[in-house]
Amino acid sequence: MLDNNLKSALKGYLQNLKTPVELALAVDQSEKGLELKALVDDIASLSDLIVVTQNTTASRVPSMQVRSQAKGTVMTFAGVPLGHEFTSLVLALLHSGGHTIKEEASVLEQIAALPGSLNFEVYVSLSCQTCPEVVQALNLLAAVNPNVTTTMVDGAVFPQEVADRNIMAVPTVYLNGEQFSQGAISLGNILNKVDASAATRQAEALAKKDNFDVLVVGGGPAGSAAAIYAARKGLNTGVVAERFGGQVADTVGIENFISVKETEGPKLVANLEAHVRHYEVDIMHSQKAVKLSQNELFELELANGAVLKAKTVILSTGARWREMNVPGEKEYRGRGVAYCPHCDGPLFKGKRVAVIGGGNSGIEAAIDLAGIVEHVTVLEFDSKLRADAVLVKKAQSMGNIDIVLNAQSTEVLGDGSKVTGINYTDRVTGEAKHVALAGIFVQIGLVPNTEWLRGTLELTNRGEIIVDSHGQTSMKGVFAAGDATNTPFKQIIIAMGSGATASLGAFDYLIRNS
Image (cartoon, rainbow, N blue to C red; front, side, top):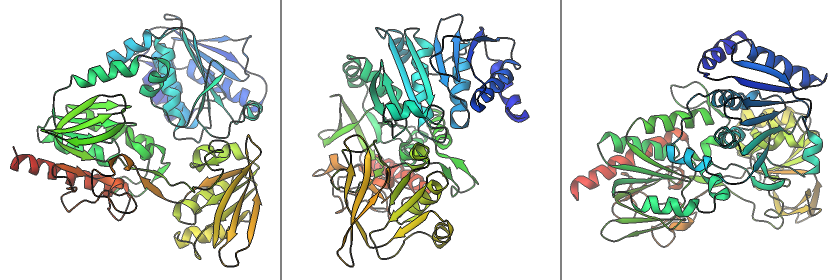
């Protein structure tokens, strides 16, 4: 099952176990059942502290429970946790076996004090980049608090459950049988939802913080670079982020990050955060900025009511996927309308889908989906495709991709529970047309996360923050970097460079205005 290199690495990790870990196995003779048994046998052979038992009462087969005999905690994997979820399995083993959990003491205390019985189920696909973050956050709750249980469900192994619950996007989380969340959600935001007083306590703690020399808003590549450069100057630096890593966390393959031949988004994000934490930077996770103002100092108001103060501010709020803004899109988001083909594509296996957009993202999505679904229709508004020629040639060579130019999407149609088709207008003839399908993947560019800054800073008509060569915005002492600005090219390496520029600009401002 596991190759020798992976076995060797896993054996090294399992040496950190301090207490026995029980793997309660429920398998059948199916391909996935045999695969899971082989995986468990490999794991058990690597440590004397791994004990394998049979789970005869499991509600899902194949599945495996990871139980701590010392703490009585339980985490379940329904399916075979390989691919992106293998790290989730390794962490579950370590945390169940008494290895130190790397989380702030206050967060661990909050988890331990959660009241009541909380049973989480999280539906994933093994190709989803976002899913492990959610699985690991939920497993952390279960590893600390015996009253919390978490089950990862591979939707490809349990398709009937996916159909019965009408799950058309991953990760989808259920809590005690009711839908809890869909899409990326951080540990902090999970705790805010299950702990009614969490936001108030956070606001009180944040309000007591000292004034910052540099306060960075956003934890993506630009924000990380800005924080590192500021901290290296000896400045009191803080980072406010809804989700550290931003959109990069959802990126599958990265092959144009100079000096790194190839990597993946979550790995790059983990390295970014580790680098930032190497310095004395105050990272404030799961915090959303809602207002920026200036009095004696700059004041940043957060969604929970807390106000942070700083001598300078660097805005690196990034961007999000652009929406079609047509009737039906919002109603069927997560029920057939999707924005991440890598995450949600496997849920549409054997079905007909559309990709909206003919740029690189759209054509790459069509090519990826074509290997999973029955048929892909690409709808491009323009009279020509904007994707690189090599991608266009590849798409045109595939027998189950149709490309439609001059197509203006007008409406998403559904039956009340899921998408059934899309309407579009031929911009040349004016003819209204319809495509019957099960899924729509929107790939039409990015929108800067700057709505909360309208009326405060000078923005372009597309909402981008206007900056000069030093990253300075229209408000002196406020700088900006990355995809939220009017930088012409939205690339990870360019965002990092602009973050460094903004940070040096802020340092220069502090010197001249101390």
